[in-house]
Length: 117
Image (cartoon, rainbow, N blue to C red; front, side, top):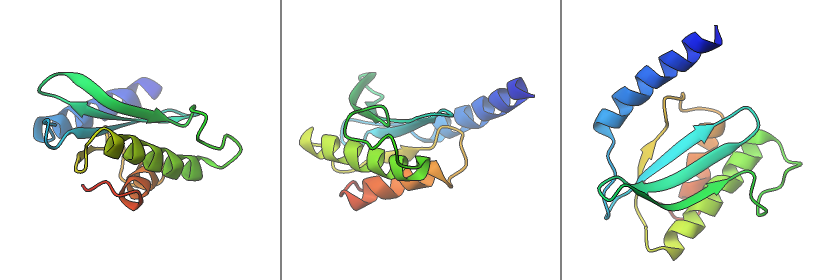
């Protein structure tokens, strides 16, 4: 059962990645969601390197909060790091996950902190 879910998500993820591509002017905000944590990276696909990254495992995120609140905090944290690195606009890569719950919360947190999608 678990393998089918992973394969299905990877198929969706590859379809998304055909359309979503990050450049130096407008990099890609990639989201990975595990059962315990959520991770976000801003990636320049042309150079093939990560500009900034944030996760719910970092010290700026409250570990006692629920997962949706942690996702909002990660979104704000990655947006703050991005503006410090000179990135103001990104394209959003949901990574094969549905756009609700923690993934949506991360995106809204990044928007609140000033990142444009």
